[in-house]
Length: 433
Image 1 (cartoon, rainbow, N blue to C red):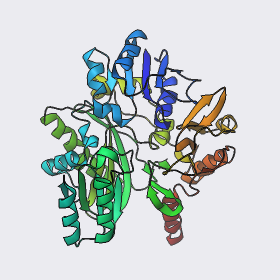
Image 2: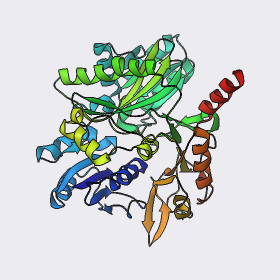
Image 3: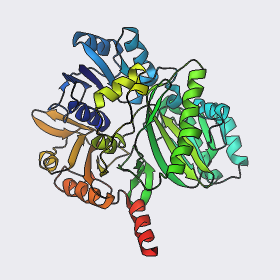
Image 4: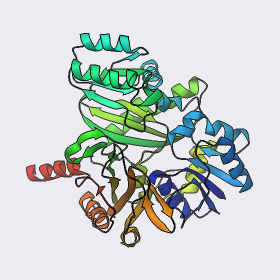
């Protein structure tokens, strides 16, 4: 079966890579793809926003499954258009994708379905939001742009001065464009963050292995939020009890609520959670695979990816059986331009990726790269994600950073502490024992 992967980032490279190892796959196409996918897929310069172009490509190449990576085309209705012409697609409909496309939609659904989430208020006017912040007394709080903001539209504020500045930045200065026309202000939750990603076929939920990512730009989880500077899987946080709570209190009620509203969810469902003293609370939902979470999950997937993705897209997950995993740990380190998440420099020559990828148990996923006159160059803020596998998190991390040390471009930067909190906790527990 021929497959089309829509997108150009590290997540999409991971999709291409795992699909290339599937027994039933024919030709793989990537639209538009990037500089690292060309060895596994035919990259076709069709933008993710070109719905007619993507449909035409899928039909011309007799594609049997489309895998949509980024959230933008999902929220815009790409899946609806593809399925209208009979092409199975891994991704939710436009209506169901509002779960990520609108923070207010997500919070309202949680409230209706009694899914645990922080108390919140939604504001459509800057004047109302500013007035609320002036009289607010529960600090810290979290201010979120309602729409899509590439993972950066969330600000933690510690007093009214910070809150007012954040509201002005989002709603008046348009720092996140139209995404900040409406905002959500919610209570700050205390606990440990955990990402749970599942495949959903409208009714059946297949929960994938747990992962944790690092959103902050700098070591020690300091600095501004980014799209993600690294991730690891699995994690000690997921006990059997917590797994059951997440499935019963979060994932199944969400899927049932969407189905009950006439917008059944098919695709990848990502729950960003805070594990509080009262159990798991929803921070956000994403309607696609996390990036860089997929770069640490897919290298561990033992089940056939094509069969698994097709089952989710066609409503047959119940017949697929249990998803199987490599028991090894995975640690992924994002290599970024030095200016990220601010202004970045494109076109910088990259070296060492081939040497890094030749190491055993290493995967080098391209995110912001392109080929320019045969030379691999930077083409974005997050440039690469380097994933190592090992029998422990420490071993996986050592392997990832060994590979990172072989890669070079001007002003490159990465965090040096991916997995630090989990490793610190493990060391403390060992010492206590």
